Image (cartoon, rainbow, N blue to C red; front, side, top):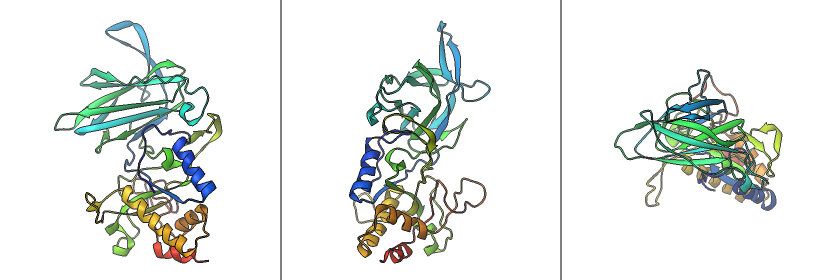
Length: 332
């Protein structure tokens, strides 16, 4: 069980960590659990919409940037809180680090503006490498700071789909928000049982039925577009993640974790239930463990959508775990 995402893990393909998880599951019978993430819907996702612009101090050159809407708005406002906020941008090109020969044919950059003035840019060289830009932003003020981001095609051919995820302390996408999935990498692969979070008091055992998911519990559903060798799939693969939801906000005896919040706390709870299932029936395969957890889970609603979501949804999976039901169903 783990709860760590590496910024550089591919969004649209299985990277080396995801491939290792799948091997552990397929070849060694390991049931692998991960948190789905604590980023809610702090993500922008859409087709790269190229438009040519000129800067006043460089009128002789035309720069290709992304237009966020039909009115050719090329900048998007985001509020970042004090401390470090990191934007991870990726697009639909092959990943050299995942084994795709040739790598990316596009090079995108993120430009940052404050009060209309250019401040800095990301400058990773992407051609022949991975289609990713990682840009940390440090807000040294004591108050939130509004920034604008601009996504520039620096070199190469324009991509189709692009996506960024924001890591930080409750950032806010002020405009052009697509409320897109934030869970990616090995959290979003076949061999992983990804887990969302619900505060333990907001569950059926304590009078709340159905259980209520944490609003920070990451939305899943990031599409897989490439095979490991960089070949584009005929159709996007959308994995059914998260599998289930577990409790968080629990007390522990570990120093620094007196109260353990987030999907980081929920995932080991579900892994613990799986351990009891395997103690009851050591012959269970990872697929059977997952199926039992999903089958016995108590349905929940994704409260970010209208109406009740019957069955699976990309925030709560198949619902809140039923430990007693899962162990009972595991008996040979």
